[in-house]
Image 1: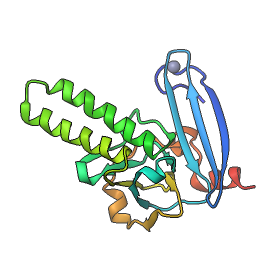
Image 2 (image 1 turned 60 degrees about the vertical axis):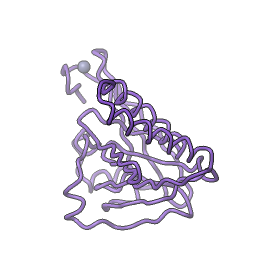
Image 3 (image 1 turned 180 degrees about the horizontal axis):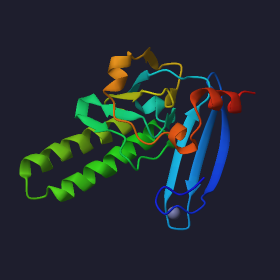
Length: 194
Ligand SMILES: [Zn+2]
């Protein structure tokens, strides 16, 4: 396949993860000499819009989170939404890793808004809540929504809902592997069938 940025041939790397109870997850990354990079995940056995909800607490910080490029992350108590953008990448992390990412984003936001005392106060409040959650003094809710069902939280304590087509259509999506490879859903299923 050719690079969407410069048109040259790209390198494609794929790795398959076996995740208990979930089946196989294919993580693909493409890179080009011009610097273009993109990675995405695809869960081969779930193909419907899903919402995962879990309470983040000190006892489950190592719970695995798979976020595809089309996954939206929300932490309602602090009003944080991480929505996929055009350059959105897939990643596999854990709940602690999500909190660390949010912490980094909020610190940048605080810096950019350093002349707005209201915004600085709000950022400090979020950072404090994250800190208290990491220490086990508070619990935050993590919601992960994916219109293509390619994101997941791997835990017995996670609440899983099927989202309606309408809810799913309201979500922002990044570039999906289906668009990258040019394969239809049927062709993908065929290709990754064991
Ligand atoms: Zn390129």
